[in-house]
Length: 221
Image: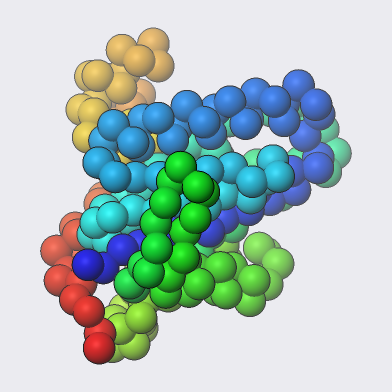
């Protein structure tokens, strides 16, 4: 079985005040609950306050999960003050590994296998966000690597340019909410949802998702 693992760290987390840090932690824990319901077998954990590890049993879901994580954190409201621009722009740096898993034991807190090694190593190789982007995809199947890294990089660039409101709308679209449902949740007009969606280039993100989700992930050995 081919899994996907996501390793991520929150950009400039130290620029947040104590109240914001606590609220962001709760926001991420709430997101994990949403993802657990939406994607059976999903397991996410927050380590030391600013490092995230997720395991997605169905690799085809991992790109959507990654974008949900990114858009959810980018839409987190923070006070505008010096030193927070990096957080507001990037939210998180992420790496996705796609491969086998040798051992998974949520009760013991054990994730061990190729997918989590690939994601962790890719994240540790990543440079500063403003130089090399904030999302890498590292599949065990090297034939898939060029295409996956390209769609990851391009989609990441779109999300990095998204405003807080656009990030909120992208998040709900990733959860398959229609525009009227999103308008009701955010208490805005449906036309405003459409406008923000268009400005954020949702149609490009959706194409990347469609491409990723139709891929056949197989054991590379």
